[in-house]
Length: 582
Image 1: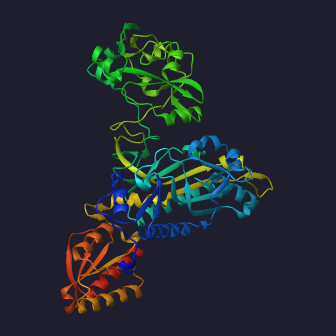
Image 2: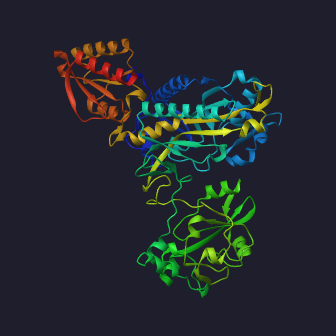
Image 3: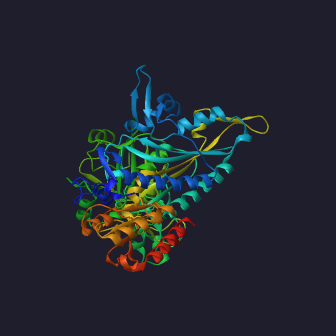
């Protein structure tokens, strides 16, 4: 491609509302333009990168035995009502009515459509297992689109779906896809982690893993062990419960002294206008881990209480999953007052008539301070095992950095990541509600066992740039760059430079190298600045040494330049491409 003919309008400054580095560079380098909030047009460079991503994904999906299909973007909402997700998905599901008043939705995902399709076409165990995938635009009415392509209303996605006869078959399909994802992201040059995750609105009966590209801008927190391979997102992560109050209060006592230690009786304290954990700490000198906080929530319209240690935070996803709730939100002041008999800041589990979920870390406290369900009063010397009912103990909190790993003696560490892929074991969640059945070898009707597997193709543009950039622009890995070689002549008026440039351009194209020739009538400084901004991985500058058959060769990822012969440059490029393709 000749750059004079390429629509790639570069900007010297990024728009003020572009927060993420990737968003700024995609706009400045002429890859995308915003059409509306969360909706983007892909210019030629952006589309070429998308096609490179798609190529890698298709190769690995085909290698994994998946078959490509194309499903409709417009879906009848009665399918979503049958699956039970119509209300669950909420306002993010973009709905509309056709001229016949029939309601449709723009597909954010395709479990309902593919399950109905396969259920109608496959009726025997002899036709299973089968895995199908598509690459298609999805739609989601995000409340707050942000960070460019990382959170948009319209995005390109690869979604795949496996159908098996039993759980063992699903396990094989799931781990087959897991390995395919590892190959895909490795080929793309991403630094990533596969972490245990919560299935969210997709649902399912078994495991799920997110593939996270490591990036400081990431909205997800990755929890990983310092010693073993354990990794999970914050919503799913677990840790070994520690009881620092015990350790610090009685660590210096002998075993006999510890066994004789008895907490004083429950004491009611007058605490006027003292509502927060920090205020209690200042007033009474107790550590936050020696306090108990009770938060009132409304789950599907019913009030509940969640009790955690003062230094811990409630994990609302774990609470929702425990209750099987569709909606969970903090109660307002009026609801809190009605169910506890006290204003916000004085709630406690003693005497509550609503369901009370107690985090397992609370049960180990020996001497705590907590709300008394009365304005301006708290209880001191609380022993949970003595003073209130522990009927619903579980893991209802976020882990903290430094907690002990649930699988070994290591410590948990936090990092940030961008979700670029997610795989799920759906089990029979959709096949049961949408009647996707088959006849087994005995002629008995059985439910298909499903898995689903997604990759955010358009999101990968941003995730890759977050990892691959410098102060001058994008640095594309060779496998997914819009062009592999950027050919830059210094002067179009120099006959020797022009002759050598055209020779190189012809040779590269004949050898199927994606090459961009900067034939614009611009100063060299402008050309090189644009070249760095666009981020093509290999650059050849043809200058005054063209008369001697020499060119300047440079990798975008390096500051080093070298003068080489044309033959050496061609050999270098060929070897680099062979390495990527191997």
